[in-house]
Amino acid sequence: MEKIKIKIIQPQKIVLETECDNVIIPGKDGDFGVYTGHTPFISVIRPGIMEIYNDQEVNKFAIHDGYVTVENDLITILCEIIEKAEDIDKNRAEAARKRAEERIKSNKDETDFRRAEMALKKSMARIGIS
Image 1 (tube, rainbow, N blue to C red):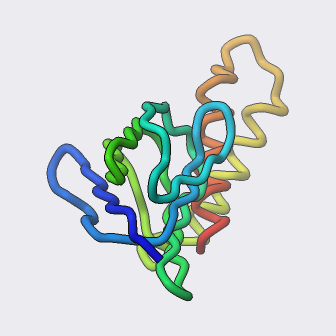
Image 2: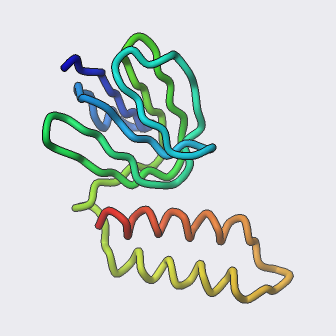
């Protein structure tokens, strides 16, 4: 099977540069898969779980923001935060989820619901891979 290249870049470093069979990415309009020969495109990434498939192995990451481009069998992801399962403190993620849910349920005028919803999505991504 042909491989597709993936490069994940944060402002301070290149996080990953490898080849894989396919990738599932949480896009703004839903999760999407990228395989070799994929049509070129650009998308916004939403908080969620990204899965990289290579042979029989699946590597999962919590990704919280960014952009992805696909062109000439190269996936390039530019993001601020991407985390491996071993980098996540599950108890901290659970506490963040509870705080976000409480803010959303509070229904107070001063609550920034958009920010609370984003915090909830990020914590759920972290919990999902930990």
